[in-house]
Image (cartoon, rainbow, N blue to C red; front, side):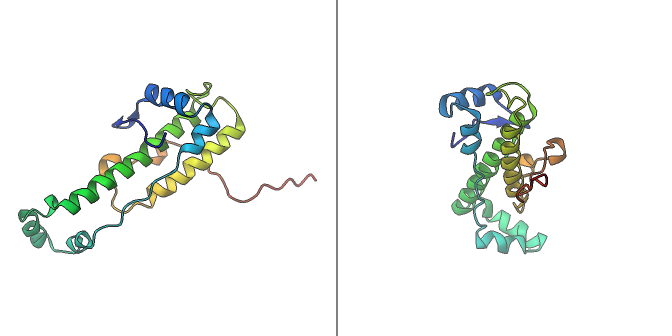
Length: 160
């Protein structure tokens, strides 16, 4: 499950995800453990310099084919793939979290599994939000995908 299936718009192909999860993981805990957010590639220094230029100088660079330079195209392709990977996996995890159906169509109502999913959702959300200049087409409105925030603090049973 290192690479998820394609997604179109805000939707993911849940049937394809379900069949891949069953084939490659076998159970929901293994599936959740397969998801790890990817980091974003460092911006090339030329792109950082380009961002600091005035509008007129940017137009001049555009006219010279700045965006067609091979290393810029490679950077943008890699960045797109990694942003899309994080987005698709966040959406899959949220789909599992929000569905009461049994795996692979949801997580049922198991509180331990829901907690594990919430931890992964939180990790993906932080990684996605840490991205500077995300692609607008891949941006997520996290208000549309609510989940219980999970604290890393250990739980204390005050009854003991």
